[in-house]
View 1 (cartoon, one colour):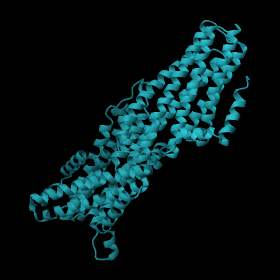
View 2 (view 1 turned 120 degrees about the vertical axis):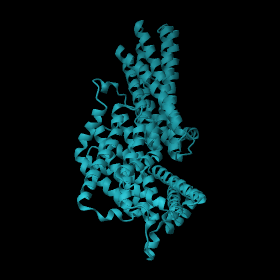
View 3 (view 1 turned 135 degrees about the vertical axis):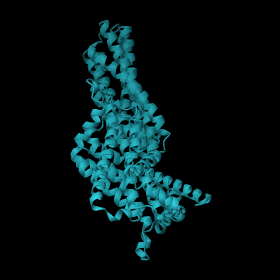
View 4 (view 1 turned 60 degrees about the horizontal axis):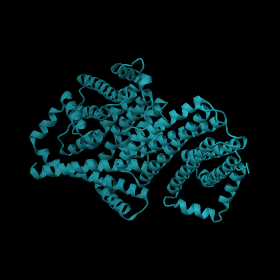
Length: 585
């Protein structure tokens, strides 16, 4: 092979790796995080966990990515270590799908159907379809499908380029002797492990080996230990992802390593021990791309069948390596937002929704407590409201930073809109918690000085607090469940609260003029009803973002103005809430 042949091989390898990356990313975007969410929820049964791990990996084309996701799940407390074992085993099976896909390049024969199955025949067609979908179609999902086609075409073109570049090596004795040296099990394993660890993808390293097979210099005896090493080398990615994670997450990465190590050792002992007595004749046969796929699949399926019943022992071995501490459970802070999820941005976006929902539920709880305290003062409830506000502040800061980092990732248009939506919503939710805290502080001060509202003022505050609690509950429920029916209740309810605030202040001024209320009580009342009105305003902001997100280009302010100009639904809700809460008139 001359200098230009080496350049061609490097170029083919670059295209191959890039095509694999593009195809995997596009498949993940098309799935929209749904595969990972299924994986998150359906892992109680070990066999089901294996099947799901295999299925998800076959789709996203990377066992390393699946394993990193699992480490993130365990670190976040979403998944137990025992559940992770089966998924990791399944990921090893799923990654064999890529080798079977690449083995199509080795098809030979003059039959028309066989020729049609060769990537060199259908990859150009897929590339043209992909270009049309990406450049001329506006639908986002169709663009993703086009990107998948393009990624596959680039991958197969890179594979063909690599294969063509290395074909001349068939006549180079040094190359043939090099692969003969790999028939040494230890050396072959080391080479496979090092190459895979370097590129951090067993699928890619298997593909490179399949490309080398066209030289005719790769025997079955040389391929087997290299494939064994590739399964060990792929563990590096998960081990790196475990750095800085919880103990359980690090144990999950060790489970991946131990599964592949034990599986490889058992396979090598059994296979080479049997070879001593049987002398497998196929060891000297030339390996083709399909042969590599068979070896890869047989090993991973066999290792899973043998070790799945012993999954508890592998889990225990990981726990022995990283021992349990007495207060480990109390030390673990389960994080919904884990940067390992950036490997699959669509799932990270889904986790952001969960994080906003957690904040929303805390605020709903705080508003409920403030309403209860207004009816009957309780110091513990006030302390809880203060603690909730601090927790919301911490969560809001964490989520804002996470969203900023996530927005820099390659996101689909819909995911990008969701990131913007969550960023706006958490700002409003955080402001609501600030106002609830302010209300609780006012309630605490009134109790301290034993100040009491008049009977009329007490009834008015009871009603406006009930309305405010109602609007917060509507806002939280509509956000959590993406319920548009509830969203439309928020604007008329906010207008009722605004009207109640004006009425309450007007009534207070009348009582003040008659000497039935003090200035101090009036200031406290004004502070609280103003805060409740502002809470309602922030609820309408959240409703606006939700409507804009649902309709993609909806102008909520114009809609609100249209409602007030004579929309029957708005009038109906406005009348309903007016009759329910403005009963003091």
